[in-house]
Image 1: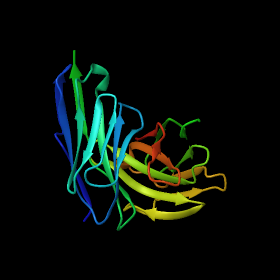
Image 2: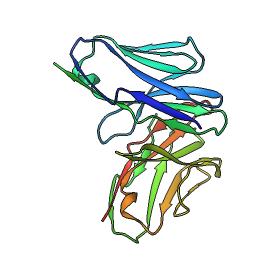
Image 3: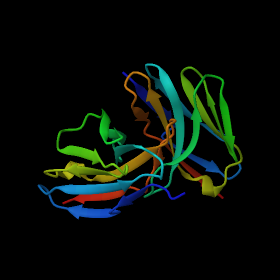
Image 4: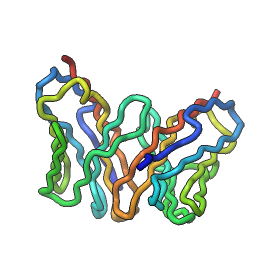
Length: 110
Length: 111
């Protein structure tokens, strides 16, 4: 069964304290892994798409990486405005559905 | 380019009623997907429409239905509302490649 697991569920960081969020997945035929950011009461905002192991994408303080079993979202020197829930999703080649993890709630304190 | 728009943004209904939610995709996007988001279950896939045809469907009861019009706008309907249907309903549209872009959602409260 296709499955996405994110860890940790919640993460509290001091401003400037770098860390990583994990997304592990089992899927029949990966057709893309996606990272989204979601602020309270809003829809998810697209961040990155990764398609194959070894691929990396960067945007400001965020960097996403992909292996055959998991993806990491690295946050370098985070700021309070990076506080949000970060969602990971995979598109299954078997079902063609987008399957979401339950997210990591990140809080960055000044 | 304007983003995905959803109406209404907030809705309060009582058990047994029905509700229709609307979604206008980004111009040029022909695929529209619907999701239900709750604190306990996260984002759950409802269905996907492409060129007025349902292309994929999640594991929700038949009370949940949708449709897509020729201009790619989409509606979803929930009949015989239950308390457990209270959630944020999100619509997402896609270009020919893979990324989905989400609207702000409709917050449905069932009393």
